[in-house]
Amino acid sequence: MGNIRQRIAELNQELIDLRRDFHMHPELGFQEHRTAAVVETYLNNLGIHAERVSKTGVVGLLKGTKPGPVLMLRADMDALPLAEENDLPYRSKSTGISHACGHDAHMAMLLVAARILSEHREALAGTIKFVFQPDEEVAGAIRMIEDGILENPRVDAAVGMHIWSPLESGKISITPGAVMAGLDVFKITIHGKGGHTGSPESAVDPILAAANLIQTVQLIQTREISHLKSTIIMFGKISGGTKSNIIPEKVELEGSIRFLYEGGPDSVERPIERFRRVVQGVCETHQCTCDIDIHTENIPLVNDDGMVRLAKSTAKKVFHGEAIVQGSYLASEDFSFYSSRVPAVFMFLGTGNASKRTNLPHHNSCFNIDEDTLRFGVEMYIRIAMDYFTSVDQRST
Image 1 (cartoon, rainbow, N blue to C red):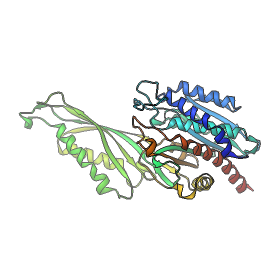
Image 2 (cartoon, helix red, strand yellow):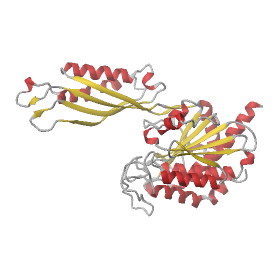
Image 3 (tube, one colour):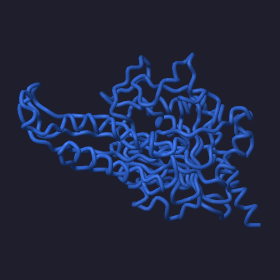
Image 4 (cartoon, rainbow, N blue to C red):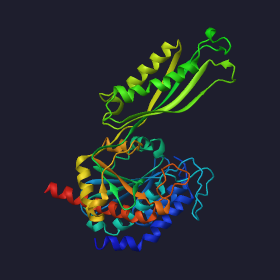
């Protein structure tokens, strides 16, 4: 394929321009109309047949000159409902919306990788399916799967990558097993009996029950589930009452349960079952009743051992040995729905650089990335595709 690194260097300004263009024009999940048009036009101009999927998603097929398996390379497209506070020439132009998670970088890296791979389609022993997914923040992967993204042609393996500010620039994290958490979100409504704060004995206080509940559920993660099986129960919202001297009829609480182990809520740890038991028990103790609504937003993201070995082998061609690390994170990612269906690997590309202020947390209003890391992502996409086809071809012979 010639000098891949030199070709990436030639396209570096285009890579940065693409990222900044996406950054200036962020769009929320399933509203990525402009974004999808830019992606679709770019792919079609490369001679890669592209079409819309799942409303604002885009898929492009690059067929090699030799038959072989289908590899899916995926980038997410959506931004966050968060106003950007960076003072940058390419800051968001959309009021109250910004790319504060790095999806702008993901799209730019995959597009430039598609360009270089398309220039060498004669070396491809298989098909690459470039998937640009909408609404990752709210599990848009499920919508794409339901719409057939893993079929026609059937996907044999998948690769994903995320820019990662907690990881130092110039490093990449590739880890077997569970690497990102499953996520269930809950809403609890505690029903009591309203009354006067001067005569609490004539009422049933849901606020006291709520306070006890917030404390008591913590025993699940500290006393019932092994500390080696990461589980986090967090409350993010509580509301109830109208006036300081009125005991309200009800209190509402909302939050999330995250777990970093295979099987998630259906595993032997049974976090959701335990959560329901404790909530109901506390409410009963306080003579309250409760409604509990829990739904799964993401399942744990589990990397395939074989794909991890391939990715680490590829990474040795791109990074020096000390830059290839391992790590797991309790954030969640809906790439997990792909990895639960086909062999897959999800990698984290470090972009944390204190001198450039690119080490701020994801979803921060001043989040930004170290653009010098983009070239590494492009090279990883290109090389892992070539290595995948080579490894499959060797196994078949």
